[in-house]
Image (cartoon, rainbow, N blue to C red; front, side):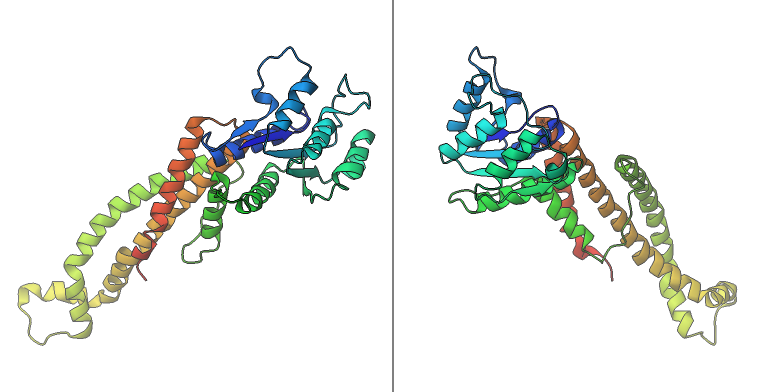
Length: 317
């Protein structure tokens, strides 16, 4: 499958990157190709001819429309912009089009752009998704939802999106009340947060091992003397037994803390670490160009999270 991305470039550069990343994460360069100006080779033909040829050869067109009308095609007698030409050609060829229109286009767009959107995009019978130009995450969610609906309606295709997996995993975590939730420190501090959490987890784990060993040695004796203080006890152990008896509530409480409370919170911290890593790679999807290293890191973090979620039953009630 070939998917053509149609939009102006300068004003929508970041939005286009999000779209390219999502499509790369969806297809992994195995089930389709992204057709976008970022990947065009040098060509002596007019740019309008190149773009229209690519439209004709594509299986799906994604139209993203902001406030700029864009450059007018020099050879077009009607004076249409490249994006309007691409929209018209896609309709003429019967290509399916997913359109995304900026929310403030009715008030802030250039006049030719308002005309194009109102007379053609909105009157084409296609349902357009709306998005805020400054909200990359929101646009990613709308694009993901639209692609999911489209691909699920095609025979022989299964929608397996990196963005969809991350969104589902984060939603699963957010709706799970069985863990104490840790809040990221502040915007763009996720990486620092999960590194500190990892260090704390290692420290608590080591301390807990020693405390568990110590408590196991005296717990059974403390529990017995908490309920039954014997009448006859050897003199050499009377003082020890007396101290255990006096502090039996403390010993019992500490045993619960060491064997239940601390391990559960260690696991909560570990889960929060996985969640923060998901936030981190999701943010990279919005702000970085797609690379194989980025794909591998996303897959690794996703698998770590799934593996940890599956061990949830090991928590102590």
